[in-house]
Length: 323
Ligand code: ATP
Ligand code: FE
Image 1 (cartoon, rainbow, N blue to C red):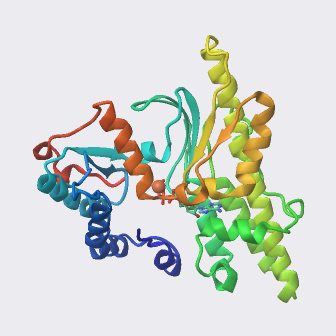
Image 2: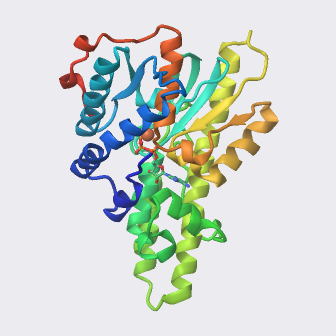
Image 3: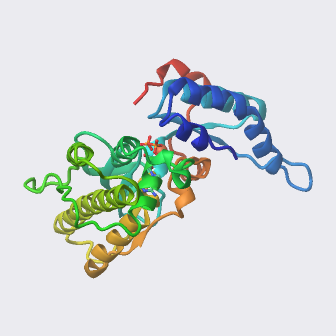
């Protein structure tokens, strides 16, 4: 396993050429290790198919993975299963279930009715929640603090918010007047920026007092994002129950994507949905952010149902579009 997180944190975000260079540099070793671990005690390789992310994402990085996946398929004579990155984030349980995907590039609420059947209830109209966390963390220069120098923006805000007072600053919850399941995070980012500017213009705030202000503001941001997510999820549950009145039984709600690492958000969703009889199911935090396991699992689901296996010659690398 390899991770690029530390380097990207150092750059204050993902730089596409850096990401694809790192993919190129490490992929051979990663593939070698995976192939070695698939050989059993009789020396037989137990790989039935290769799953690879083909969209959405940064084209240069996707190309590296796809090129190597094709080589492995050709060498082993096994089929290739192209995987949609967001479908992979939505781990699968017994269908149907409600899914909330909250990541660095997306915010989607939908019903997973089958491996390849996803009903979209709402999506973000502007920024993704992870993007808002990252931009706010960067504006607050949280990575200058030693304890947050090696973590993502969202992780840093969660850490800074611990012990902060969310009632000190008012970060407004967006789209309250819209009775649908869409999301917006640009407003949260902008109103936070306005609060930061106002505080910067106040004279004489230094040291511990400054730090306390940062912690309080991070707590307010976290609360605003959690409330917004919960309100949309509850609306989604009611909508779906109304539409599918024959499904009276309880169903699960899955939350995934990097922002689902946030334990305050997890707890808010859990306590908010519990009284509605909806249980929260979330992968462990290390499997909420991008990882190979989710892509491989999606490959197993598709391959075992004979879904979406593509003959190698039909899968053109040039077809890949950045999101
Ligand atoms: P996408 O999946 O939409 O293409 P991505 O793959 O870049 O985007 P992920 O890897 O799923 O996104 O998640 C990364 C995001 O998760 C970052 O924006 C990061 O700030 C956020 N994140 C990570 N940990 C936390 C946390 N504890 N609280 C909030 N956000 C977090
Ligand atoms: Fe992702």
